Image (cartoon, rainbow, N blue to C red; front, top):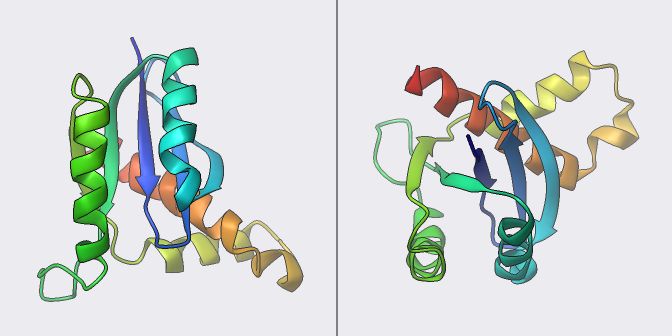
Length: 137
């Protein structure tokens, strides 16, 4: 089997998580500057077999797309053109940043460590991926 990769896409940086090859466990991989994201994905997919991408889908409480969806749509088009053989799924990402922050608190991270936005984005990507895996089962 191949890995599934989740992206918590943001204007400045993108959190990335992947599954193991058996697609059982979602783990944070890294956070990259969004300007470097395509280069990172090209290099990663040369080394690892990626079966599909899961991109967070920001929604309002009434289920309508949030304003940040407008930033994600051009990226999705570019992703599909660059990797036509890899399907792209979407996963609701409401509350993932809050859940990531709470995870950091629950893990005992100090206040200074919780200010690390890169870590929040990586944990958010992991939450998005785990939610997708749970939905897929």
